[in-house]
Length: 69
Image 1: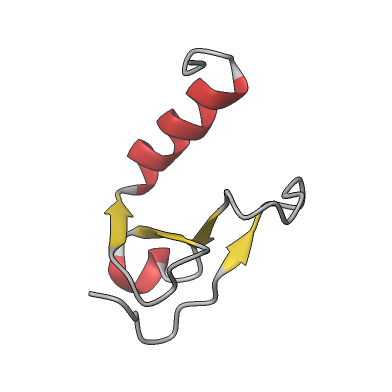
Image 2: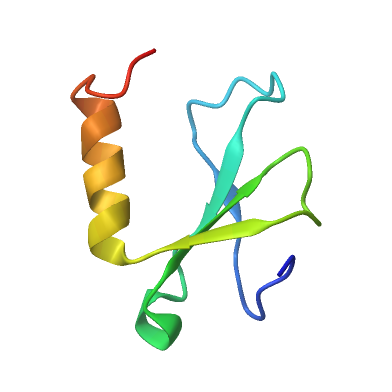
């Protein structure tokens, strides 16, 4: 799956345009019940999908420093 009908893709405002970014489409939560994520360097490549609760848990983990390498 490389294109989702109606998806509006966006990058983080903290993106520095260095190329290591992901884009998310969260405008279809009501219609599809999912948040979509893709690599900004490969916009025709694979798309991951997450339930809203999964996405919130991931973002929370990043914000809390739980997912640092």
